[in-house]
Image (cartoon, rainbow, N blue to C red; front, side, top):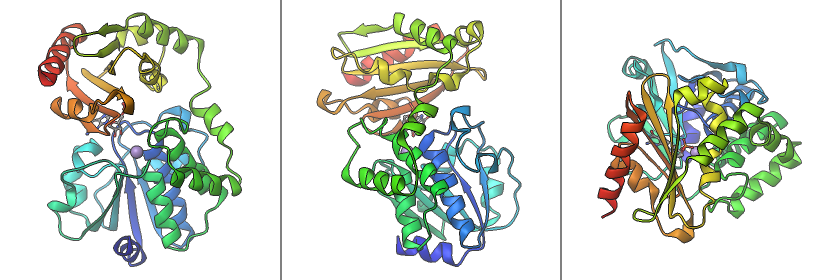
Length: 326
Ligand code: 5GP
Ligand code: MN
C-alpha cells in the first residue's frame, strides 16, 4: 500500500478503468477513487468499454465515466477490480498502455499472475481476502489522508454491498461491515442502495426471471443447477441483459444443487456464464470457470464463450463441466 500511495502522490494525470461488463464493485471503486483523487487536485479520467448498467445511474458522477479512450499521455493508469488487461475488453489497450508512465493494480481476485509480471513501473495492491475492491480503495484513500465525503461513501458502499450480495455472501466480514458503518456515518443509506440496485424491477424483467426459473435443470450427476436466457427471450419481453443481475443468486438457493450456472446470450454472438456456489457445498466454481477460459472467486465466477447457437453450447458446456469434474 505504501508504494501505491507514493505512486499516486507523484502522479498528476490519472486514468481509472475496470473490467468489461462492469459490476457494482467496478463502478463504485472507480467513481469513489476518482472523486477522492480529484479532491486532492489530481486530473482524473474514468473509462468503461461497456455501457454501465442503468441501476448505477443514481451514483454521484456516473456521467464522468467515458465510453471512448484516446491514447494520450497519462502519468498513471489504475486498473480496478481486475489484474489483467485482457479483462478490460479494450481492443487497443496496447496503444493506451504505451502512453502511460506507471500502472497501479487494485484487485481482490485470486490470481496466479498479474499485468505487473510483464510490465516495469507497476505496483499491485492485491488482497483476495477482502470482500471487494471497494474496501481496498477505501484503505488507499485513508492512506492518502483523503476526506471521505458522502458521495465517495455512496460509491464505495455500493461496491461492498454488491460484491457481498447485500452482506449475505460468505465474504461478508468485520472489515466490510466496519467500512459500511463509516460510510453510513457520512450519510450513505444501505436501504437506498438496495432499492436502486436489487429491489427495483420491471414487470417484464420479473417475467423473464420466471422463464429462467422454469427452465432450471438440476443434474444429480454433476450437482449443477443450470438455466439459460437467450437473446430472443430478452427481445420478446423487451428486457435488457443488465436486468438479469442477481438471477443466478436465486438459482443458487436450490439446496439440492452443489452449484449453479446461468448462461446468457448476448447480441454479439457471445454466451456469458455465471457460476455460484455456497461455502458449505465444498465446490470451487472458479476452477470450472477457468477450465472454460474465465475466472473469478471460489463461490462466484464467470466465463464468456463465442457461440451462435445457445442450445448447442449448453450441451457442450454441460459435457465440458462433467468431464472436468470427473
Ligand atoms: P458475474 O457472474 O457476476 O458476472 O461474475 C462473478 C465473478 O466472476 C466476478 O468476480 C467476476 O470478476 C468473475 N468473472 C465473470 N466473468 C468473467 C470472465 O469472463 N473472466 C474472468 N476472468 N472472470 C469473470
Ligand atoms: Mn469485485
